[in-house]
Length: 255
Image 1: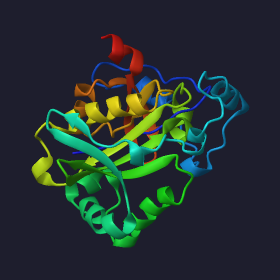
Image 2: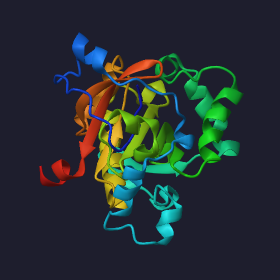
Image 3: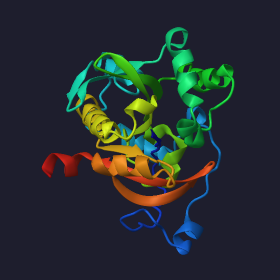
Image 4: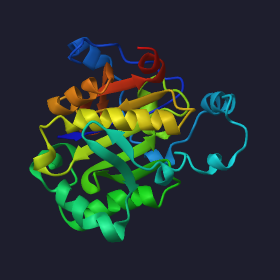
């Protein structure tokens, strides 16, 4: 099982909602916004969005402002029904061979499209590691064993932000379960629940967690649903049609 998501923006219109299975009509598909191919790390924010972000109650200057994701390396382990889970930021010298191997397994390669030589995986990771911290690649460890790969990112600073009505501090998740032995056991939904709750706990300014799995990836979409995400629309992204999945802080804390 592999999972993906992104995004946040300011004034873009939300694509028309779709049915409970994220199966949009031909009209919905025709009206979906088109991707403009702008890279996440080069996204230019609109004046409207910047003003909205500056008006948030917690935006007084603080050391956190230098870290767009509030210190993932300090979040530590969190208990889950399947064991103790922790997000550990990637180190290339330690983790590249493992992640490269996962990217070349058929179940992952079908949706991540990063199969091939190791330097292809390295470029993907280095683009984040050498960036400004708005996207952090992590290993997910379960009871101390590395078994998944995650990208936690500032969805409001990502091109997906142009595809829906984004809010400042929306946080996105990409996920893949690495080894076949860990797939098909319900781990995906349990870990997505844990990570969504961890994001909300550690990033108090964040009110929503966002994802955009490939609409064809039924196990991924199902795992997000079981973790409390709701499909809000279908959107066209590079190389795929995605289910825009959102888990909202208010709904989860008052349900």
